[in-house]
Length: 173
Image (cartoon, rainbow, N blue to C red):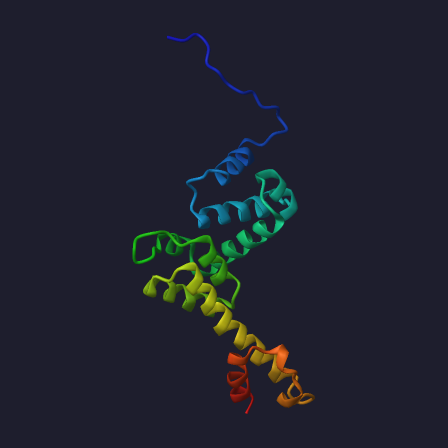
């Protein structure tokens, strides 16, 4: 047998648990949800800023921000329940699908998640659903808030896409 074993000696100021967490986040086989929760834990447990973590793992600050939103969605939804969800063809949920679910109000995100799984929606379908459904709702709510001072006729036509005008006008009546 060997008399010596190759090893790396770490100084006392390097946290082995932290190093392990960073290495796990960088694993290629990691599911998007696992990565997001790992990033979120690194920020919360180690009190790093998003920019610090972005630098450590070679991602953008925007990527880290999205990961944190996904992790917060998972906390509300239930991580154990969410990690087991698969599309109809047995694939884990994509990062893009999780982002879309996390960036709309929680109840809408839950409904969207159910639709993604039930209808085996691809990324393009998910984007279209969120863009047409939730963005229209947000616009309608905004227009309701300013309704007293602004009528629909005063909104310039280039501010609203044609397919959304009738929906918005109907909601405001």
